[in-house]
Figure (cartoon, rainbow, N blue to C red):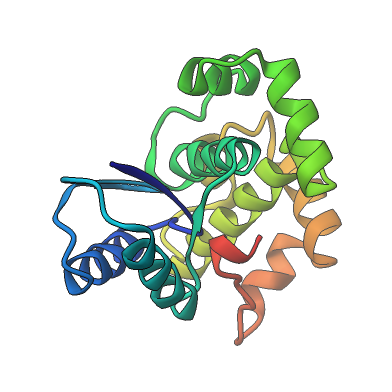
Length: 186
């Protein structure tokens, strides 16, 4: 049986969900970001108890089709920005259509309808969090970060960064307490 789980955005999330599945007596055959497969067909009470336990950890089983698609969009974007080297010159609409096997127009309209925001705004929020993370490590120049994340220029990255945070990247880097957000909270 396959479950779709909201807010799974990192390898630590996968470990926590897997532990909860095992604690519930379910045997996971696959645990991926946003998606889990278990052997057999657990009863409704076991699924409800698992969902209650997952909610305590900030996760949730998604049972309607629209929510699953939204979570798949978010997972694809998180994977692209935080765990992939493919960002440079990648067309987002082609990427999402290829990942989810839906027309991008449908995905975009659905995302906007359910989330009240656009896919592009979600992508930008994820990119800015990645910029913050990379600046925190202080290993790359802003030019290298812009290139790594597929920005056409440092000026464009700086402009988006300031719109999102209210700060310039240079000023942000100089702060002692960098205010980063959990990617699942975006």
